[in-house]
Image (cartoon, helix red, strand yellow):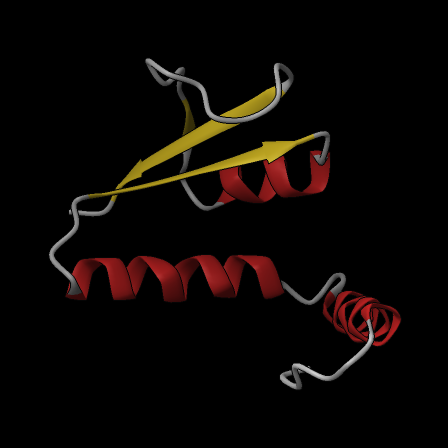
Length: 88
């Protein structure tokens, strides 16, 4: 939903519809590959991300070749998993 006038409930409803349609269809992996492609085009050598309390997403990061790492300065919750992948 792109409208700035949309209510919060409408935005959540739209997000849930996307989640429902995308579940089990490899959407997250496809989005990761698209992000990695754009990062390469931009000359980046590494992609970094995080997950918190989401085993399905953690498994997708593993499938996509990401490795766990500990950043020097963690930016999220104490139970957050940090992921990194070299894309060169």
